[in-house]
Image 1 (spheres, rainbow, N blue to C red):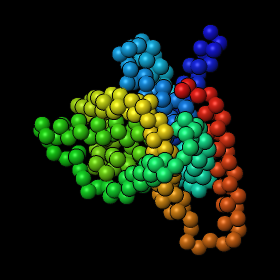
Image 2: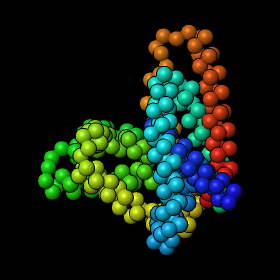
Image 3: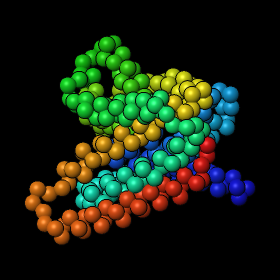
Image 4: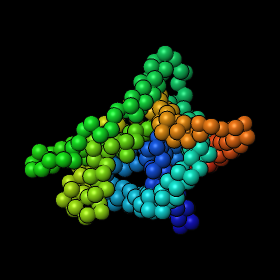
Amino acid sequence: MKNKFKNDLLIFLKGFVIGSSMSVPGVSGGTMAILLGIYDKLIGAISNFLKDIKGNFIFLIKFCIGAAVGIGSLAFLIKWLLETHTIPVSFFFLGAVIGGIPALYKKTKEKPLGIASAVYFLLGLGIVISIGFIPTGNVSISIGSGLSHYVMLLVTGIIIALALVLPGISTSHMLLVLGMYDALLTAITEFDLIFIGILGIATVIGIFLITKPLEWTMNRFPHQTYCMIIGFVLGSTFEIFRDKILPAVPSDTDALWWIFSALMSVVTFVLGMKAILFLSRFSND
């Protein structure tokens, strides 16, 4: 009973951390799930849902409750901290991302690294960085009406699912690219159940469609897959630097500011590494 409670608490806690961190640019839910050692379990529970409906449903409910609590509580605090203490908080998440790399490397089955490994790593790195350069606002799926509008909502849901499942890809950025970010917020505030329902159903369908081939790839080609995932994860740090750290550096600064900021950044970076290393010890994979 004690072990079951501990396991349930860990699932809830990891969902809580993943949900609360999703407001951070460059820190996707998939990235945090991998770093916390629950990604494989989530993918397996979704892709093999029908093989153990009760067990998988209970696991996913525990995780989703934790994530919902995280989104509804700490996400707002983290967003406020990012706005008021941008640089040290950003370095905390950078430390968390970097601190999870050794655990990811172990998942490559510790096969000796070679040219092919570097190619897969660079491919993953390039994909995530390239996505960050896609201009937002040029596409607008949210406008229009009729059947074509709802078909595009279905397509959007599948794209959102892809961003949710694959590590390193920011869901909020993809919504901005598709011109759906403001439309989704409006639909939520105005209780547009048809809009939310179609988008939600499409996202769920997309997740189920994506997880099965992803799980097969991870099991069949673990070395190549995780080399690419390491590229995804490290590529996600680019967005933290570009969108948060660099804009937060004042144009007119003195030596004292640089010294203080550097010390604070080092401290929070180390704390981020320690936090992710501590949590990843309790792996569900």
